[in-house]
Amino acid sequence: MDPGALIGLILGAALIMVGIVMSGGVSAVMGYIDIPSIMIVVGGTMAATLVRYQIPSVIGAIAVVKKSIFVKLGIAEEEIKRLVDYCKISRREGLLGLEKEIEKIKDAFLIKAVRLLVDGSDSDTMRSILGTEIDNIRQRHSAGKGILEFAGLMAPAFGMIGTLIGLVDMLKKLDDPSKIGAGMAVALITTFYGVIMSNLMLLPIAGRLDTLSKKEVFLKEIILEGVISIQRGDSPMVLEERLKAFLQAKAAEKMSAKSAKEGK
Image 1 (tube, rainbow, N blue to C red):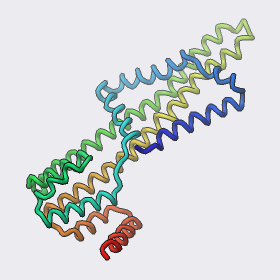
Image 2: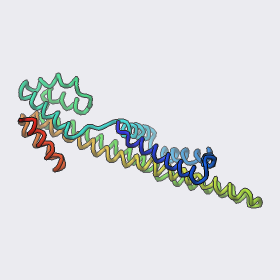
Image 3: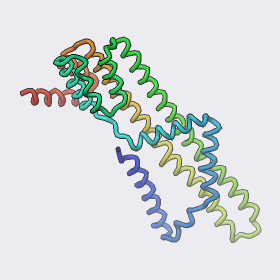
Image 4: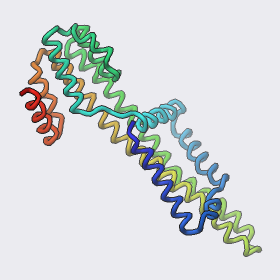
C-alpha cells in the first residue's frame, strides 16, 4: 500500500481545521458544520454523476479508486530481474520449468503470461491476448478518471447552488438585520464544501489514478515484451538489454552496474 493519498487527505483536512481554529477558536469549528449543505454538495454531486454515467460504471470507478489508494505497484527493475530469472530457468529446464514459478506469483497478469508460455503459445497469440488485456486496463482506468473529474467539476457547482439557496433564504429575512450575518455564513459554507470536495479529494485522486494507470500499463508492457522474448528463445543478456530500453537512462545504468557487480 502507498500511504501517500491517505497522508495527503489527512494532512489537508488537518491544515484546514488548524486554520479554522487559529482564526476563530475551537468553538468556530461547529460553525463550519452544516448538514443541509453537506447533503446538497455530496448528494447533488452523486446525483449528477449517476445521471451522466451508468451505475455499473460508477461502481467500477469506486473499485478503481480503492485500488489506486490501497494497491502498491511493482518496480520496473524488479520485474525485469524476475523476467531474466525466468529466462534462465527456461533455458535450463525448458518452458515447462516455469510451471512451478506460477505458485509464487501474485500478479494475475504475470500469472496469465507465464501460463501462456508454459502452454506453448506463440508470440502473436501472447501479444494478442496480453495486449488486449493491457488495452482493457487502460480503458477501465481512463473511464474511472473521467468519472472522478466529472464529479470534481460538479462539486463546486452544487456548492454554488447551495449558496444561492442560502442567499434566497437570507433575503427573505432582511427585515431582521441581526440574522443577515449568520445567514450569509451558512450560505457560503456550501461553496466551501464544494471547493474542498473537488480540490482536496476528487480531482487529486483522479490525477493520482492517471499517474498510477500509466505506471501499471508500463509494467504490463515490460512483462509482455519479456515473455515474448523468452518465447523466442532469447538469452538472458539479450532479454535484459531489451527490457532496460524501457527504463530511463540513469535507472538503466544503475541496473547494468548492479548486474555487473552480481556477475563478478
